[in-house]
Image (cartoon, rainbow, N blue to C red; front, side):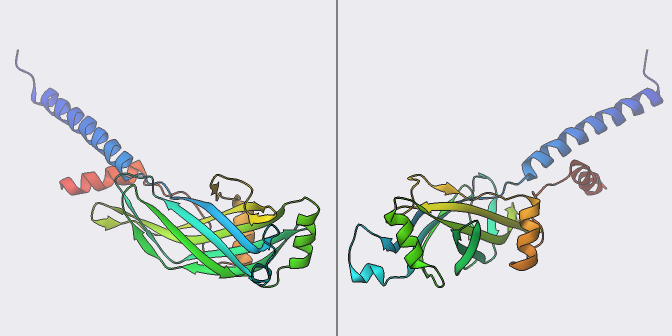
Length: 226
């Protein structure tokens, strides 16, 4: 018995809704983004190297760092704004800013890694106190804060920019190098930390994870069919 027009129309509508839903879900999954991973691979303070007794080292008030930026997405690129780094010396539960450095913004391709190996001059660091702590067998602590904004390239277009604010603590031993042999991942300190930092240090909005809502994608898909 032939189907009525209403039944045929109902089947077509059901098929359209299912197909649209599956397509929207696929698009949403393909448009999801992941912020890059930032880590300190190497950290060296020559003036704190007590194993090399030379005037050159004692008078060298620089900090050498090796920053690694890892885009783990295989199908999306990352465009970085200028990357602002702030270095701190930690003493008696306080953080003393001792250096700043800006890495110029750049584009990073799909699944690519980037390294920035640089020297920065430290000022205001209590060198004598740090050397005394090392002489007593203790490690000294530094902090590294990173703040930037990133946007993601999906096919031929870019998303809006999203803030990326992360930090890490770095222990330095009597050779002037970081204690941890592995790379130290910079992590978010949480909303309260970010709010405090934004108020006093960086003009960036609160960090948040980039998402593309499935409803918005579904609406875009329907509009494209009109």
